[in-house]
Image: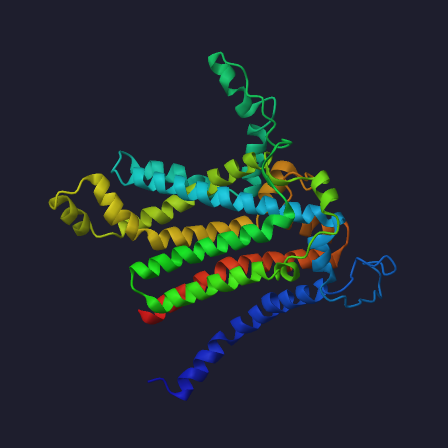
Length: 381
């Protein structure tokens, strides 16, 4: 049993770390939240860089403007880009990383060499990766002229400035999509709990699904997701959807991070006892059965961890986009880019802080459930 003296010593040992975290992390997060509720840089009568600028609290007006004002349409476009980038980036890295890990698990010759080759792109910064792929994706060179080496016509695709938009949707339809996705996820969770006879979690999932449905039916989304000031004008300016200019950025990001995912999966595969595989083979299972029933189920925690890390990276993406397409390309804008342009170019510190807080919230939505589940697992273990 630990006595009071041991607890005091332990507290004093971690106190410097707690103080540094409190000052350089949580204090500045609080400062950003406070700034996002002021008119700093938004009021023309109060220049942002004036010596004695007076800040006025405006509540949530900056957030409301970001979600509804036609002038802030670029922010909503950045959220759309972030969504599609996250989906394809996470899926691409996970699938390619798993494929590479399974290849290395075949005891190939010079495995260490290939593992180093696959992992090497991760050693580069996103700025270097962006510069390399910007050269490779030049419209009149790089990848586009590869077919000419075998006598074919060059590829006619403008990677960084492509004007095509796929999977278009209206901004007002987002609550419907969120409700559908939420109910679908909760239904899957409920079905899994039924199969496991976990009735307590089943009641929780069913109750959450009913709440989500009632929020949509009762029209409460109008308070959570405020309608646009001018929906017609917004759709005319920039249709929401998957911008073709994001393809090159997604390819470059997958190229860099798939090796990292491969390393995670390789570690997971090597941690599976060989006795389990041998037992499956002795029982008549094929190699496909071994991977399907032994290897892949054992990799489930590693898949979750990899997806959480990749999702965290995708929501904060900035340097890769900056290096490949610059800060002024509306087709590839992301929230991190707007924090830079609004905060350091336009001196709109309040709007920049509001965007940063929204980014923090999105990251917390991904990270918090994962940390909660991990803490529950560690306590139960």
